[in-house]
Length: 221
Image 1 (tube, rainbow, N blue to C red):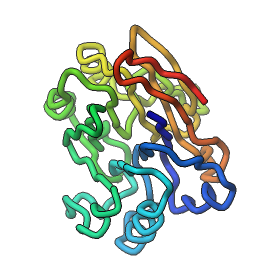
Image 2 (tube, one colour; image 1 turned 180 degrees about the vertical axis):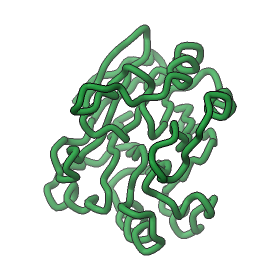
Image 3 (tube, rainbow, N blue to C red; image 1 turned 45 degrees about the horizontal axis):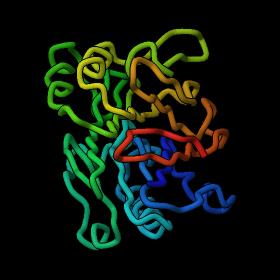
């Protein structure tokens, strides 16, 4: 199964197709921050682009910029008919690939999907099921591809604890643009797929893999 991971496109998603950086395949996964300010017109612009990508299945979650999804819990049927799946604390299985997506994060200024206490964060992370191939969150876990340019770690410690229990084969996220990259720790392949740098200009390529559902092997391509 060929899977592409992207995140934090912030209205600049068309740069990916204009520069032929999306090869097509079975699934593309976007880990949130599809917009700049979360206005409806920004969301619709993204969805119109996303639905036409050369992937059989297009999966995304919201990020802290995507305010519209704090009051809108679904997408129109026309997008679903084109293979678009929006996950909001939901699970989906696609051709045997088990995926769960959630947008929450430790409080970060006055952005969307903020949670202010460890108790609240734990409540939502405890919903993450076992036996996952792919976990999609917007925030990174603490100390995994979450380092800001100033050197601080901005991931979520409660998420780290849950991932250590659930152990998805792949955990993809974004949010911290400077954390872009991949890291393998204790059986989990972590991917920060932020394509923009901290200056919100295009910097990083999508992450492309081949994933064997039976062997759970990840091969970067």
